[in-house]
Length: 163
Image (tube, helix red, strand yellow):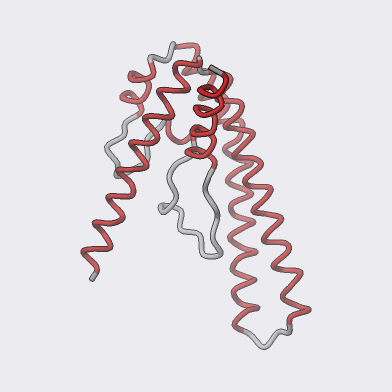
């Protein structure tokens, strides 16, 4: 039973928090976070009512999740903006005549901002996790796995069309 819970939690953590912000972040490239998953990303057949219905969220749970999302939204957005700016500065330094001693501190700043952003995502995910029942967590992990598969297939299809 413990192994099953640990496995389910691992799947949840990996499916929701296992993303990396690249030096050239593309906002529509990354799968949505748990908070965003309850709204549904534009252009995907993944609507908020469908997700809420499949998880059988109560009205109270829906309100709690929305409150958590609102709590973290501005912080995450600000952190993403800072990361984008620092990443752009790093790219500029890399293509300039700057020496390594000028580039290293900017790289360290980018790494630190990435860590801070990941920590915010993780904290929001933990807060949302507390709202869901164990059964809902497991169902959510399965839904996210299907969503990730759909995303991968979509990306493969796009790559196939480009060549």
